[in-house]
Image 1 (spheres, rainbow, N blue to C red):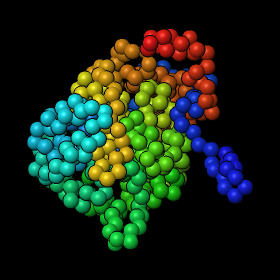
Image 2 (cartoon, rainbow, N blue to C red):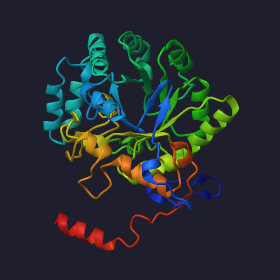
Image 3 (cartoon, rainbow, N blue to C red):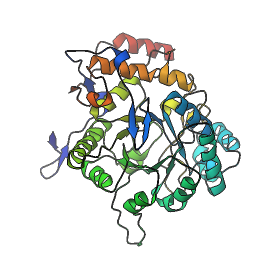
Image 4 (cartoon, helix red, strand yellow):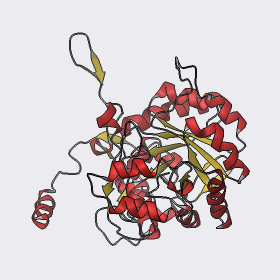
Length: 386
């Protein structure tokens, strides 16, 4: 839908997860018969959940635990784990910082240079734990860190920044050749983030093994406020999925999509898959885990940026184990635990046995779905908060 901003400017209407809903199918499926598996390159996963490459979410121990549960954890190779031999001390400092001081503290802590030997050591710890070693680097650091990661045995590379495009122009004469980086890597290279049809098509044509979709929807991200840039997730995923489907039709190569950001509860997961994602990346949802290194806090990769921080530290509070959050049983009624069962149930209601079939689920615009008839719930929560 196109709306008029003025006589000369138009804008396309877009939608977030809270504005859409899934419609039950005329024939349903037993949740026990639902298959949640997906794959990227040669790697297949039982669960469509990826833990964000954030210091508050993933360390080697968490990556190993997630792999054993059937999910995937991505380690940030430019984070505290590779800057400090003992990252526990800087993590404690961040958790203990007052809100007005925390960005300055992080900027100082992240000035410590990334050490190649620590990159190799952390990857080795993941591999020794019997897990798939997935690591994240920014395009700017990729030429240096990718060879180090691959020599250490990394199985999956995530080339990730706020926005990544196949073509980047600079009068300074410096540019990152995404096709060249992909061609040089032995491991599959997933790329993100993007939100548009044309950008996604160009990245797939460059050889991306998978795409991350989302600019600014994460709980700890302030990019949308700082930069004014972003697209609501439901529309962003659907647009990129349209490019993925056309690319698959034209080439025969299927490129999985990962919805990255704005996913907190089971309903968000189900809607993201229905919009076209094959998996979801979870940040704050897993920062709540007892095993998470953030100690009840969560912050984004751009929070400690030296010149223009585009994130903040948020308090999430530990609510359960990684297994409980992903596989249950749920001890809360807000949809933040047992995400796998929530997705299976939603897919069953929509008549979908597989992730691919869920891409065909009927979607409607329903901005009042979450609040319709729920006045008593909201009034009780307000009363409890007083």
